[in-house]
Image: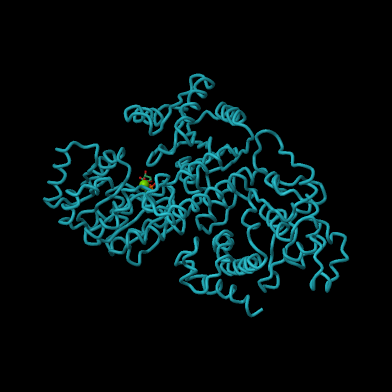
Length: 633
Ligand code: ADP
Ligand code: MG
């Protein structure tokens, strides 16, 4: 292997590799396929640029960033690396010139926009090229499950074949397990080495403010921007919102430079606004998600989401544009339930003209709703936000010294003063907690629920639980509903599950916060406000109409619920032996699906959303055992 560090210093003038760049580059140089997942700003480009310089030959780089291509190419030429590009911004003559150069055996980097691949002419020419490396930047665009699917990307698998399946590197900043698997599958990578590095951006301070009214959002936004005079981005989910907020901010922030950016503006206006945002001090960009990919402004001090994005992937990517210089930066969400409805509307419009098959469309919609739900969970969580992001992306890092609002205050930031929970909810939470306390960590969620519901059965009578004061305390509710409520307490940090006997029968017990709430020293956290669903009045426990988070729980029949509980304990065990948060093994939602479908073998298990081949390989056996344990009990 050549001395790569020397090349790095000579060619790029950089001192040393960043963690994991070296490993990726070495893999590329021995012609291995690589999937490289690193956060924005980590230095992914180097992973194909340096190998090109070292091994010579042609490298084809696919990138959707047409507007940046000319710059990238110029940069490479400045470093002394031959580079050319091909995209729709060029005249026919310019494109012909590039094709000629290619035919004459050009060696170096060829940047191509994916839309070129739909030209039959270009494709025909491709077959004569023998690239030494095929690099696909922003590779998540290939996956329909990703947050940024580009139809032009879907042909890349074929293109790769036409090129004679050269060694390939796919690069992205955001890819969850399913998207990763999809990228590998669609490009037909051969036993790729998958390099995933640190998603932990320690200098980002995450915050979320829940507001009841749009007017509150505006007030909060203006307040924040009056106090924070640095430069940053305000993301909105529609073009209309961008225009309105731009006007509102211009009117309220004096001479502060505020620039709008969305795909409905003409190209020239967009380019000029982007340029002014990059250079003007204290500037604010108000934008849709069309803005930002590839924007290299290191000192963005805040990214405020006026509307939540539809997925945590999109959020992480957009928020991640803050603080690329490593200095403290804020990532703020202004959340109102209206945003959820907007996204639900978008989701309902997925493939509304019916191009896809029914099943595919429904699957896409289901995925989108699941991802939205998780995004909303993030906005309302009572856990460390940074940790939640890391867990979601499968990063095993343990967060320390966090600056998120939860870690600083122990409570999500609240815009309009304390959220006041209805009295009956506060009472209900205390009743649930006191039952957990009374059973003193000896029983699981199921028994606690049976006691509260006043179910006289083998267990409750054998242990004389029917003599407890809490027995039947919530008998107006079904056991199912009580179990769902107990899980809500766990999610909001008032109770936790443990499996002290390591027998897959986790017990439930109070946390310190739970004790404080039970004693009335502290109010229950705001997200529990909808613990009592509006349309499931206690007097009609049987006709549960569900709402909110415990939807899925309410759906499960007792047998399924029992399977779900068993799967949860297996997951807990798996998580513990691997020292991972349970999240990383798989999500509750996946466990619920497994509990519902009861797959009998690994093949069927693999069909379940959230269980990629990798997960099946790692955990499939234990999961199937837990399911089959059912019959032998
Ligand atoms: P990504 O594509 O992962 O978002 P880039 O490839 O655009 O990141 O690189 C981001 C910045 O980091 C660039 O300015 C690049 O020059 C710089 N960079 C990359 N590798 C190194 C390194 N080893 N040492 C210092 N700077 C680096
Ligand atoms: Mg990049």
